[in-house]
Amino acid sequence: MNKNYHFISLSLFAVIIICFFLPFISITCGDTKIATLKGTDLAFGTRVNYRDIDSSTASRNVDPEALALLPFILSIAGLVVSIVYLVSNPAKYKSSFIILCILSSIIFISLLALQFKLKSDIRTESGEVGFSLKLNYEFGYWIALILSLLTALLNLYLVSTRKFEQ
Image (cartoon, rainbow, N blue to C red; front, side, top):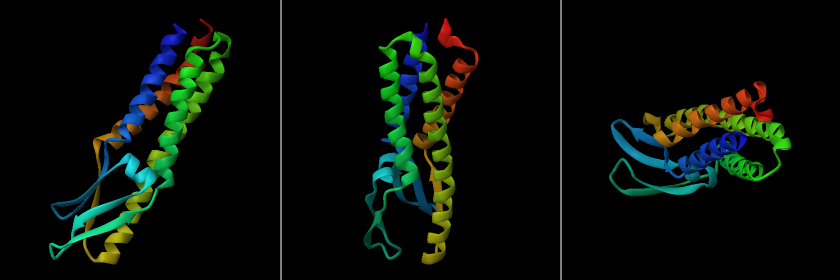
């Protein structure tokens, strides 16, 4: 039964990683979508091409965002920890659930902090360019956020109910 719990955690971390390759945010000006960025674009940086106000093509570098990189790396770490404990000695299960709970909690908190930081950044950018830019969070972001919370709660439940001893 314990291996099933580790398999569930492994699956949730895998889906969180996949979410980073899906659209995470989109930036709009009025009704016009300027750019859509994946989680990996935010984590590692990218170059965004967009249409300027006078219909000319412009591009801009998006710097790597530490609050996007951290959850991506921790999701990979959670996947690895889940795999290691899936094939390991059952006596170590309690520590694995605690580690997975901590990792997924940090992922959740980092993704929330990313949301607030990007909101602040877009306000600053709107003031600089003189246009009203709006940030929309796409399904990749929301799925990653919800799954990181579910993973934390699952592993917290397993530690608190001592399911690892069965």
